[in-house]
Picture 1 (cartoon, helix red, strand yellow):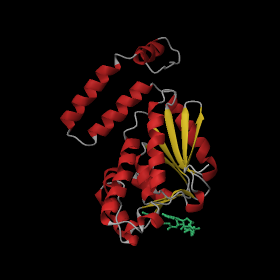
Picture 2: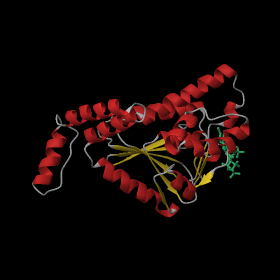
Picture 3: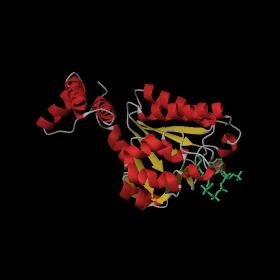
Picture 4: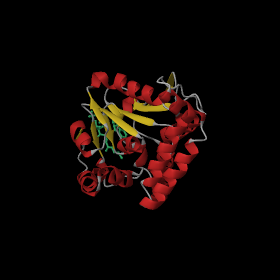
Length: 259
Ligand code: COA
């Protein structure tokens, strides 16, 4: 097929794979649009409880926006391309169910931006992560300046964007840029084990957590606390909260629906 993506379900986990391995999974406009559609579909499908995003082949998660395609852009087209990527990545970030980036190699430029809009990141020990756009005479345009700042703070964000030099997985872990680093041979199993754990959690509780943490990242403490209380109260309207608390009191494992 000509689709730039592969999608496959393992139980309640949707695995979305950027599939342009001969171009190290570089993001052209068609791939941005396919990702947007794939995340819309995963959001709407109640059978999907967690999403794993990765890149095809042994070398790269995603090696960036497609430089060949970008090289011909006018200023207006450049702004539009940026907004196209930003919209897709905001859609991923605002997913109502957890999204894990399985970083199986290079995550550069738009590839690191794509990993950063996911909720959790697990990297193979050989992965390299960076925002090398400055070396092309550009800057990150899919949210990289904003999300890197929020993830790792100003000093490291300035270092990575101004030098353009990638960091290895160990430094990425130390910076908080990834949640975990595992041997490449274990990456898929470890990622699927984490996704399976999340897929067994109460979907509406996770949705409230995602919302509350995203809102809290952008507002003051009092607004954030108020939002948390509202979400906490709302959780008491769910059958899953009754089930979770009853299961604890009855010393059994909870079975969460999506109710
Ligand atoms: N856009 C378009 N094509 C890309 C690409 C990108 N971001 N990254 C890699 N490719 C293509 C290469 O052009 C090459 O295609 P070809 O075989 O048709 O010539 C193919 O993918 C393999 O890449 P190659 O550079 O030969 O692999 P390598 O192992 O020598 O180097 C990298 C790997 C990741 C270091 C190198 O590909 C690279 O620096 N990529 C660009 C990273 C970047 O600047 N990203 C930010 C973009 S905003």
